[in-house]
Length: 273
Length: 273
Image 1 (cartoon, helix red, strand yellow):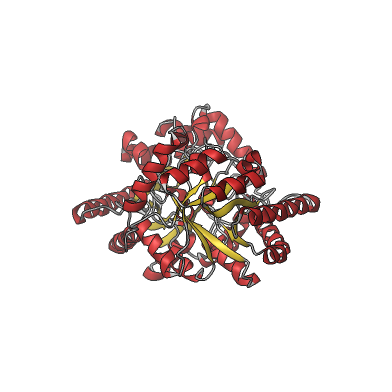
Image 2 (image 1 turned 45 degrees about the vertical axis):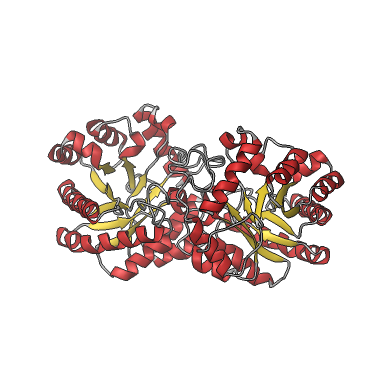
């Protein structure tokens, strides 16, 4: 596996420095020489959409993705339609922010029927694809780890994301591969190969042992048990050479000054990713 | 789905009343009219093997399974052989305790190479099968939830367990299906069908939302999001009609008096399982 030798592909997913607002994150990346940033809608909203765009653009950064669309299943048709409308707004925001990838965290089922939840996800994606296509935005299904099946996403394997991609055969639909969510899967390598041509993003972090918390347990690359070189190699062999986003939900990291976090990210990116 | 109308198939997995020693657990089941008990090796050892057998037998209980064998992968050949030897002792204990099922929690990889860990599991099972066959014991691979892939088991899907069963084609090898570990799987129903004829146990509990803890987060049947009727129906359609073990790791339940826990188990068993 060829080592990464510079930061051309490195992206800071904004959640990793959750204590920073938009301006601080943009300034932090610019100062650290990190050329890409992955934005979150709540932080964009807090800053203002056009102001966010201006800050990013003035700093010479590129936006690797917008997090997040999705959250499709709901108990009533009316609720489901409201969520699809919200995703249409997210598509418009992605256009304005100058990225072509909207990350989909598909959402949990409203009840015990996880298969019905999966059907609602497929229905919603089908309805959104014409909008995405017209806007030049790609919808990136991010399969979450199965431990989030009850509360964040009914889509919990790469195989399911690939099945949806195969079903819709649309250039506006692909997958975002996050190592924390997929590393455990005995089929991860063939499923990454299967996703070839549809990989819209690659997220890195690590899985410490034992995992201290379901949501906030993930940690910095190199501080856990994930074979990061193996997975990057698989993703690159499948043709992906776009930005590599560092996305870490971890209170200890959130409590660390952002500049220190970025410095550690750069160090670990070269040695561990 | 036909409701359960009596307690003929109900089994208390001993971990559910973790505060009870062997005698208390046996007395508790006998008093509550629970005819089966799933034993743990550490509690058997604390009581003594023949004394455990005597207590269970005198109370008229049957042992549904012994937990647990497995934990196969290790860094050195010497360590791996020591673990296989320990599993041979577990097989002998299962014989003495009058059960024909030894549950396998296969163990984590010693390093980042999860596929090598999986090979070590297959190697160990291959070595143990003649012993199991000779002793009349069945090895029940329990796929754990993928969130345990780093620290408890490299075998995290029913599909992997089924592949091992297909590889070895042995009447001494099967699978133990625990709803907490498999409910999220988009292939859970076909994989349960695939396991037909090899299902050696069925464990129930529930997945509360959000999950408060990786290891101790599971809860009483009916207190979470698992479609228990659907899964029992699938397991029965695959031909399994043996004991249904209640296995719950949960500090709050461990802190509740055992008799109260058994009373709640019986109530939820009839209404939710």
